[in-house]
Length: 295
Image (cartoon, rainbow, N blue to C red; front, side):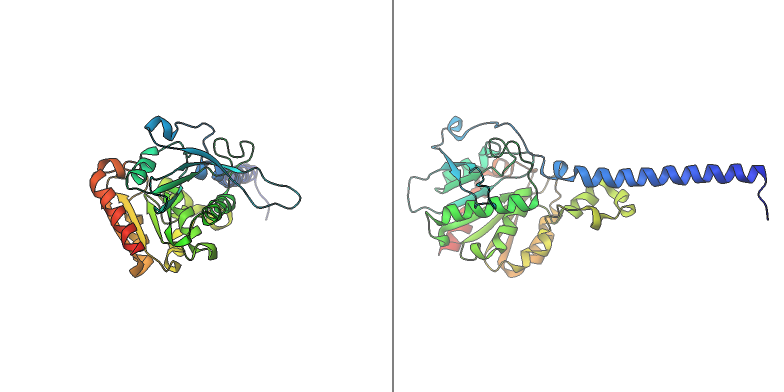
């Protein structure tokens, strides 16, 4: 059977069409794979503010990192906001994406006014910490662990609470599963998500069903699969009007955490303003949680 000229022309067009579609598909996959770190972690290079500008006592501290082969990494930058009582509980604050230790300082202020010490860490790749190095999921976990070990060298683990906001909530959940954190007093996560895969589906919708997401996704932050292994008190806070991370994700985390977790939804609050919109109830809920863990 031989092709006519018209059939050959149609065949060539089909080949060009499917070839172009294949190239577009490969380009789309490469784009999602290559840009995921910047999209997920979105590191800031500048420092928006400083606790002293809010009237808070503050010391600029450096957090040492363990040696990496032949290289001794530069220490990380952090704010240490001390409480008046030297024996006060300690909050390890892990910030989210598109943030630094100098952003969302209203959270730091709230914890300080509750009477707590606060250590606010910048992961490498954020602001002054490793300005020439890009962060990734594994390094932010390492940095959070280094900050915890720094605090454990100064305070008893039973008075240390791990707190994470947004993406920092995923970092906090991972840290709470580590052996080094097993004796910490409790975990507080705010405005956080179930996993990056769920967030991607929320943002990109049906497009992802045509992509090999499991092969492309290197930064997973899969909190929903981890939170059930944390066998100590967990407080989950979320704004009911959060348009960035829907509060149903915190409800799912609460369901998977079991009896150890409680969920508090702040009426009228969005992604970053729970401690402002629900100021009195927010602080009471946090203070009650911390007191309950210590007692």
